Image 1: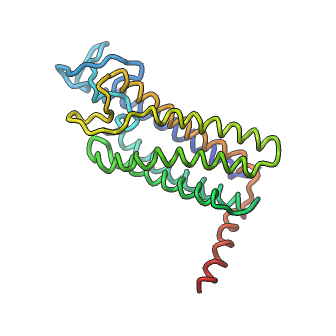
Image 2 (image 1 turned 180 degrees about the horizontal axis):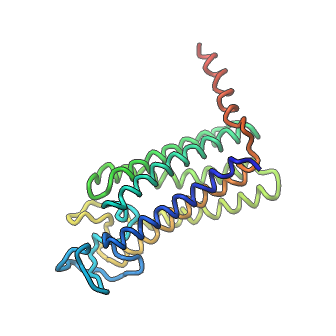
Image 3 (image 1 turned 180 degrees about the vertical axis):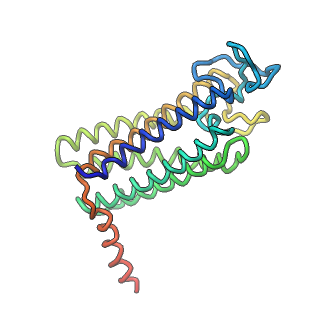
Length: 260
């Protein structure tokens, strides 16, 4: 088995563990309320970080969004590191998957589109991680607006590509698995309410705190699905050779020479 298999396995392990660690730090530092809290008030006598006691007063500014969990230090430092490192790993996985398809089969528009959407998604994720929502709203929202749709398109394209290239029963089963995960992502993504500016800086347009909290849960679910989808590339990467990247380089050299 090729050592390349470590890469797609490491990405979900690293990112999922990392963002839950960020969440735990944010809850411990009382920057957000726990995910099991569904009771929110319009206002509190004291801000959440300075409150004491077993029962906390939460407002809609304390909804446990992933971005909110990584807004304030020290968790913001780890959040930025996780997003940046995860983006680099995702780009590398996308490139290796692209080269693997060329090596084993042939290049196609679907393969190029999957590579492009994967890299655009990674770029958006870098913006999300490095421009915190409370301090750089516009850039953060631009990054989120790029990352979420492109990641959904990426998993859909890769699912279609898996079916197109499948020849064995195991490859068809892998296609079934990826389609199932893509469908879950397609269901979870529209459940995010549309982004809306509001005086309180709330990310959602609903007035209902229950709907806003439910939307945060769907955000966590969506991100877990996308990260686990990347882990399924371990199936192809297990048989990948060290010359896979050279296939992509070798394909580009004739194109460059023809342009000269």
